Length: 375
Image (cartoon, rainbow, N blue to C red; front, side, top):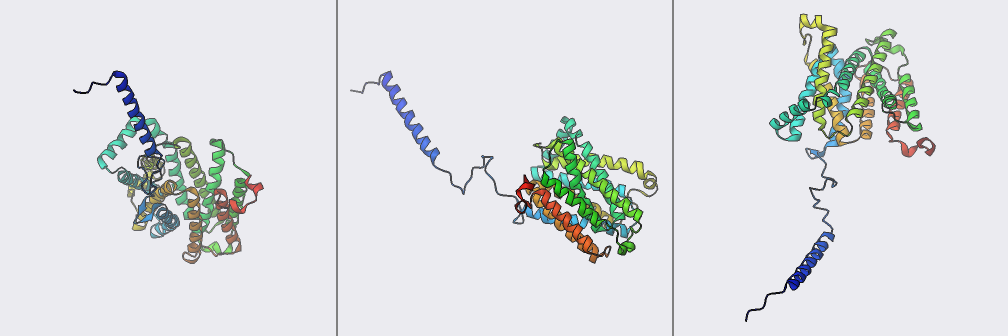
């Protein structure tokens, strides 16, 4: 005789028991810790392997390259001016922005992996978010002014003096952060800013042996100093504005750099038209260009992108180490290779104070400072 079918109550009871057992098995499985060797790719909180270049961590590769490019930039400007004294700084700034746009586009394609879809996405971002893109017009103009003033100041100052003076951008960035962003700066950073100014002032002390350099007269040196100071303000303002507008933006850093280069290029065109239109009309944009001039434009363009890479893959403290090493290398090369300056005690103390203030401001010396300053 076939077994009688279960009653509805019995079937419900068996179903409940089976569901309970299934829940217990799932709970046991979920309580087992996952292997540390196989992190979940779907978990955004799990730290993935750091990107590498030829097997080396990209943060160290970018830092070494940034140190080299920062040091080489000043000397590339010097070499370009020695190779030709008729090229136009305004046209070099224009080609620098064009190089930045091309480099950013290449890195954006590498990051996304698909060239056509990347170009389509770039155009769509520019077309559908015009207000977001227009926000980059202000820092684009600021960075263009900064580059023009840097070229002008290097023509009037020695490489070492210009490099040390340019570290005043830390002071301008801090003051503008307080003014624009409403930030508060602690006692430690105010002291470091004071030390920074003192170091730059010691470096600027006139020396009799500097009468042989092109920036011989006191008037030219003073103009070069104010040009470097103006570059510091332009750099600080551009950085603070970028932080105010774009902080927390989910967009690719290369996308933002490409958009920034567009406005930088437009500002550079405006500079060419208002400043050197007659010279461009008669000789062309590339009049007086030599391989060293092209190398200079390439170096300046790559330096700005390397800073972005360092801030993305490393951190600002490591960037300060790169800056300090660059100041030391520039000073040594300026004294022993270009023979623009003669190192003395005053210059050495000023350079050490500038480098120390940079580390102090970034927090790298906190372990050596008393708690009353840190508080």
